[in-house]
Length: 354
Picture 1: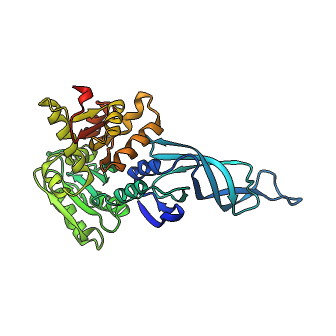
Picture 2 (picture 1 turned 90 degrees about the vertical axis):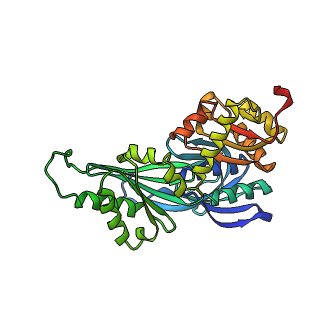
Picture 3 (picture 1 turned 135 degrees about the horizontal axis):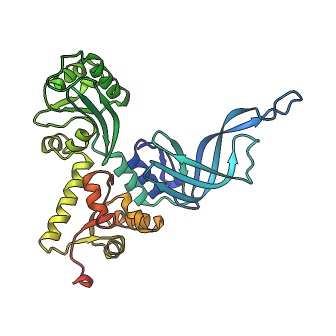
């Protein structure tokens, strides 16, 4: 998340959402009663005598609205904010109406709160420190897959087949195939990204050579040996591969995996310093017992109140605990979803559970 302005005394924060994880973060920041200032567009009809009634000019307008409802739809990667318009930069927009925006990665807005709590600053700071982004490509002579790992969220950018046959097939020119794969990497790259290349055979080396020649992609890349999958399945599999986890050891993903593993270890040996399902994590949070908490969008499959989830997560962070958001499509996310979509390691066992 890019925070371009933060005036805590006035409760003003201007930001740009960069990733699906940031949508979770914004959901924890925006609440009913806040004011959101955002850009939109409206069609202004031409009222001249010869104008067509179905034609109009689309003009950009800045709208300020008081939030009435906020909802997160992680499955399609958007945050919906609705509210009453209180100010607009164009007279064609009535302040008697309502407005809604769908916030997706790349969207910018300004948030105004009546009171800026220290926990909101903590939430923003944790969103800015994600341990970097990784562009992952797994490739062999027949297919390639490109994925973007940002925070704990994995997006498949490309799944491409080369058209080349199996081992007994006639040799074919793979240069166009490699070029398209590099183009996908280049289109997703931004400064600071690390490129990770893996896959069976020598095709990965040919791809690495092209990446090394690129002035941007070549800034930071690594080739991982010993991995035998390619394509989109290879991308998903690589993030569990130990050599990759060494490369990405500073990432949120690896930290979350460690928390999930530790939770399962404690359960297996009867250590009661764990909590899972929202009611139990809420109880533990109320006692200041939560050390680290992992939540996925699987928590909402149990008819859970979004506001309650936000309240629990913010309470944990206020008490110095760590909150981590996990992509439910990943294996570790599925593990968390199996425990009600939320798990936590505790600082001490709760007597009420003994």
